[in-house]
Image (tube, rainbow, N blue to C red; front, side, top):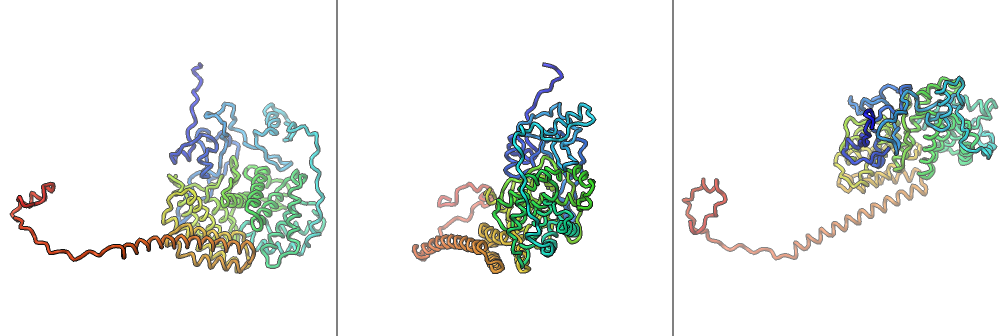
Length: 569
């Protein structure tokens, strides 16, 4: 054996497991981190895949909470280079000076540097080619079948007029866009005018965006468009068109965002979650998670006309990320985890609360979140309590964000309830405070006619949480929550709202029946005590024995084990 060779050591536990003193299976991500949504990472390969050529942004913006910071001094970069079957030692073939991805300016595509289709290009550069092979899917398959044929998409004006698009877009930008803020209203109006007047009538990806905006505006409006459902199908047909995906651009991501939001408001939970997963995969395909790719996209000709400056692209990524991770955490589904994220935070603008929405979701144990607690809690209960304190200290004011903060609090509670771990009174108090604020905000939104997707679910979940807490402090708020739930049913009397109220009442009746049973058992014990025993009779007069009081009492107190005074003394 050569003296220069090094002995291979077994990989140590990942950082979260090591800090929490938990058993780690040394995989990536390990089972413990997967179970508790921790950020699994190892310290034996800190820069194995990131490389020196990647633009690592400065430290992420701290979340200031009453002058304190809960974010440690870590750059906003998440690494995931450790595969499940990786070795414990760094491979000597690893080139740390290369970028983890390649951005194709022509197609606006991002590809991992280790991808099969990228290797001919990488090899060509390494061999000194003046014109290395382009990023192509050659040899990916035999190519003995043609690509799927493109569908013919009708003109959007056949379903909705430019005037109606403008009306519902006004509703969307007034109600929804301050929260998401992924579209510039002026540029959107200009592009709509160009589309309807034939300048860009073949831009089917933008047509899907416009249809999505009109659908959400129609949903949030008291005056629903007669063909709202047809507009949803129209946008979906474009997004599912394989030829449309072959010319992928930012409009596809925006249109999928609109679809995910609409499905969250109108459809089943898994449908919205799947759509949001698609958004995340498209973000990676385009390269929105990579700061270097964002700068290249923003510098391309025509990007300024479309409003796609670097800050707008960052905003699109982080708002999409927040929506996806909120859906995932709410439904206890796996979230898309990027190998790394170098996308910087975007700038907060007046009239927009998009930055607060993103910061709220970053307080959850979401993958690729830049938020870090200043200290590592020893268990899940402590961790979620610290995160919940951060949620409340953020002090959001927008009604939608207040309801979202309540949803996050209920997510934390459900995880502790399922884990059957102890829940402190302080944690319960914070959950109840968030829930009460959420009920008030939900009723405010309903009275304004803005039926956001989470206002009914938040109040319903709060009723369930209060019934599960089973403490007097929770019982005191049940009446108010049920009243709020009844008011929401009056605001939107649908099958689902009535079903929610019916289930809540049924759970309350089950809770009442259990309490009555417990009370009956206690009353039975009390009744047996009152009428089943004979009262004691009067005590007989007992004469006091003649005791010699010449006892040495100091010795008695010093030596208490001496026998008590008796007749022999």
